[in-house]
Image (cartoon, rainbow, N blue to C red; front, top):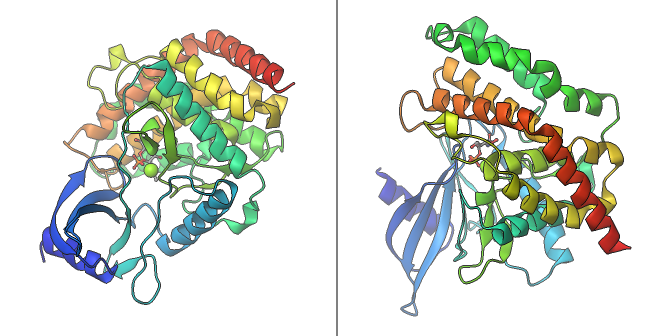
Amino acid sequence: MDLNDKLAEVSRLFCVDGTYLGYETICIGNVNKTYEVKFRMPDGSLKSFLIQNVNTYAFRNPIQLMENIDKVTEHIRKKKPGQVALHFHHTADRKTYIIDGDNFWRMTNYIPSKTYSTVADPEIIHNAGVAFGEFQVQLADFEINQLYETIPDFHNTVARYDQLARAVEENPLGRVEKVQDELDYLLSVRQEACRMTEMMRAGELPLRVTHNDTKINNVLFSPIDKRAMVVVDLDTVMPGLVGHDFGDAIRFAANKVEEDSKEPEKAGVNLDVFRAFAEGFLEMTAHTLTQAEIDTLALSCVTLTVELATRFLADYILGDPYFHIAYPDHNLVRTRCQIALAKDMQRNMSSMEEIICACTDAARKQKE
Ligand code: GN1
Ligand code: MG
C-alpha cells in the first residue's frame, strides 16, 4: 500500500468522517515522521489533522510513551484549562494508536501556528524560554514515578560516551578512521561533559519532570503575533535535570547556524539569544531552582551540545540507524557542527555564567 492510501486508512481508523484529500510531509524532527492530512468535512469545510509514524527503533515501547503523554497533558490541562493543546484521536476501541507491523501511528488535531528553527528576535526567544520554563513549573508537582523512561539513559552523558565507545569498537563500516579528530575532541572534554551526570548520581542535582527535547521548533507560536501557544513533542518527557531542558534549548536556538550546517566554522553561541532565552526561562523557574542547578545552567549548554555530538557520531559510525539522514554524511556534518558550537560555548563560559547570574537576580527581585 502506498503512503497516501496508508494515511487515508489510518485516518479512517481514527474515525475521521470526511473525504480524504491528500497529505503533506512536515519536515520537522529527526526521529518520527510527521504528515499533515487534509480532509473535506461533511459540512463542506476543509480541515487538517496531524498523523505521526513513531520511530519504534528509537522508542522501543511506544505504548508506554503514549501513556506518559496522556498523563502529562491531562496534568497540564487541569492547570491551565482552555489552553491550546494537542488532542489525540481515538480508534473505535478507544486506543490512541494503531500498530501495524513495525509502524506505530497516532493522530492529533492540527494547530494553525508558526514554528521557528533559526530566529534571533529577542521577544520570540524570550517567549520560548517562558514556555519551556512554565512547562517545568506546571509539572513540578507531577509524581515522577508515574512516568516510564521512554528512552532509558536518554540524557545520561556517561552512558552516551559508553555507547560511542561501543560504536567505535564495532566499527562496522570502517568509518572510525575518518573521525579521529572528532573522537579526540570528544574524549578530551569527557570529564566536563559528564559532570552533571556525576552530580546527579551524587544527589547534588534534583530530578524533575523535564521535556528533554527543547528545540525551539517544539514550541508552537501564534500565527499572528509573537506569543508562544503550546509546547509539543512530549515523547521524551521523563525524569531529568533542569539543565537538560535549558542546555538543549540553547544548543539549538542560540547557535548562529542550523544544527546541521555544513559550515561549522560559522557555528557559535549568540549571546543575545542566550540572554533572551535565559531571561524568559528563569523568570518562570528561578524561584524553584537550587543554587547548584543555577550554577550548572551554563555548563548544561556545553554538556548537551557535546552529548548530542557523541550521539550523532555514534550513529554515523554505526551506519545511521537512529537519526533520519538526508544524505550519506549527514550525521558527520551534524557532529562537526555540534563540536564547533561546544568549543565556542567553552570560550564563552564566563559570559554565559554572568548572564545567568544577572537573569536569576532580576527574576528573584521581581518575585519579592
Ligand atoms: C531528535 O526528532 P527530534 O528532532 O524531535 C532527538 C533529540 C535530538 C534532536 C537533534 C527522541 O529530536 O534528542 O536533540 O533529534 N530525539 C530523540 O536534532 O532522540
Ligand atoms: Mg523530539
